[in-house]
Length: 261
Image 1 (cartoon, helix red, strand yellow):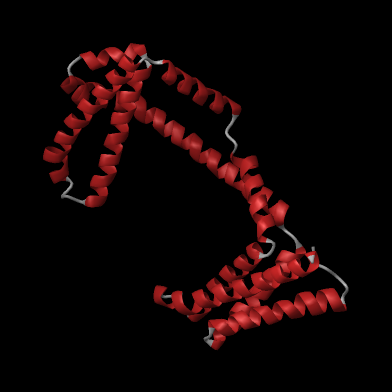
Image 2 (cartoon, helix red, strand yellow):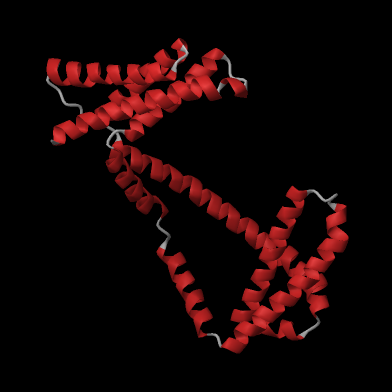
């Protein structure tokens, strides 16, 4: 039963890869301006990748989860800081939370007024730029309200002139404190993501790579090529299936007496 399931998984993955590869190469690549050779190459890559991933798919998903846990688990120091902030927030009184909420609400209305009557016209009503600006503005408002709620040393600003803080105080802090800190933080996060993505891919490859996946990948590629140059993705499906039957069942298992792992 296990052998039959492994065989069916192999045949299905090869046929699926050939189908998607040929379909993409025939139907989707030409409208993008791909030449014949480039479309075939693109389809072969997609088909082979699908075949490589789809065979023993449950094992692949398990490996993805394990690789993610290895690569993207947060450092213990970061987790500790998050827990401290969460604990601090839960310990604040309802009056303190209302104080931060009122300050953030008032700040939002001041910024919304300035944006609508002064900045929006200057942006020529460009929806993309305006949306980015509004998102940034909301982030500042939430950050300010959260800061007022949590830290006693900044809570006094809510009692001062809202106009002063919205036009002078917060922009000054934003330029000279928040933006430099944000730039350094984004650089560190970006560097960490690049390194950990490499760790993720390496861990996933080591956990999943096998001769069986490589063989299925090749069968799917060959089926893609047949379907593309014949101009028929169903023929690609049949070809991928036939290549899989020949390479896996006849050559590997029956002739060479091998069962690719």
